Amino acid sequence: MTQIVILTDFSGDMGFARTAGAYRIATELRLAGYEVQVIEHFADLAFKDLDLLKRLIDKFVDKDTLMVGISSTFLTYLGSAKAAKASKGLGFYGAASLGHPLPDFEMIEIFSWIKSNSPKCKIVMGGGKASHQYAIGVDVFVTGYADSSVIKLVKYLEGKNPFFQFKTRKRASGGTYMLVDDDQMASSFDFNHSQILWDKSDCINHGETLPIELSRGCIFRCKFCAYPLNGKKKLNYIKDPGVLREEFQRNYELYGTTHYTYADDTHNDTTQKLEMLYNEVYSKLPFKINFYTYIRLDLLAAHQEQIDLLKESGLRGAFFGIESLNFESAKAVGKGLRPEKTIETLHLLHEKWQPDISIQAGFIFGLPHDTEDSIRTWIKWLMSKDNPIDCVALYALDIKPNSSVPWKSEFEKNYIDYGYRFPDGAHGHRDQIWNNWYNIYTGLSRERVVEIRNEFLTQVPTRVASFGVPNYLNLGYDLKDLTSKSRKIAAPDTVRRKAAFIDRYYQRLLAS
Image (tube, rainbow, N blue to C red; front, side):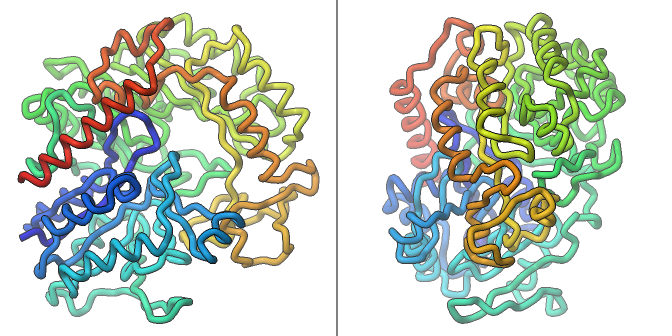
């Protein structure tokens, strides 16, 4: 009897990766005595082989299943005038950044299949994008960190928690749904001493790269960013060193894991934190950890002692959110490093880190002060041979002021102050969730920003780097080959390897 099934997806990369959230929740449920099955890459699977997904549902969902959870964090709800027209007004789910389209009616078919196996089962959506405004067919939305609230919810579904606190909301299409929004920061949960406890049913491969939470929240408040623990105090919500050592050691003994993707919003937020991890965790392990994480470039520029410390600690891939080489735009969102200092620091890192540590950097088009000319001016450097970045990620600015996610970025709360408008000029219009903004000061629209982004996508460096490296390692690629400057990964080979990997994973689930 599987009491709880969790569907999750992270198919926005050609490699294979798991994310921490679904397994963090599964761990707490398992510790509370529930049998839990996590199913990976469900949206990608529904797009490619809906019948196989139904077979997996038949395998794990029966009359005793209490809930099927959906992790929303890497599941994008896509929308546009074209998509709305094609779907007769219905929205689309997308499997991470690959954007595999799942029309609402197809999601409803999946939900109906679940309900046919377990009529009392609730469809529960949680995670970072658990927005209850447009999702159709979901019974319960859980917002914020759900380590504690999910246990209370499941006990309520069992009939054992009659005083459980939730809100009832009317659905525009008719009926009601539950909204669970208590303790969104999980302040009652002892995060510092928590772990992810992997289970046989998770089908972990020997040597597989795994996610691990080192801390929660970010000490910064970038104006485009919206998460519940943004602006936390330094050294808050950081794992106990002994707990981390135990988790690393257990995963090594059980699975041979030495490569990790860190769930850590700003890994180098303080030198004190990095020194603690080196002195009390890494140096006391009988094996070497290799990790891939988010790093803040301006902190490395200001605290250059971190550069060698990170390499010695086991950093193998860094993702920098540089956002813009237009100083006024970068400063406007909270990234105040001048372009010349940014470039100087990147060259320093290349000198000290290559070939051991790959560098990926993200840039956002459409920030305040961005014009088409200013973007074209600084992006030329990204395409030049002088650029030491291994992989460049380009994004269009997202502003969703009418999203029902409870936390909002500064831009979403006060977008008018920064010159952003929406086509009808009205607050609360449905289209606002689709990001179709324009800026009255710069003349740019999101539609034009996307066109500029697409123009440059094939011209910027795109070697496997940062979080991509461990995802490709899971498919059997060699680390030295991945980090070699001359190495080019052939897409057909990757597609073949990933398809075989995923197929083996699903066959193990069916055989369990």
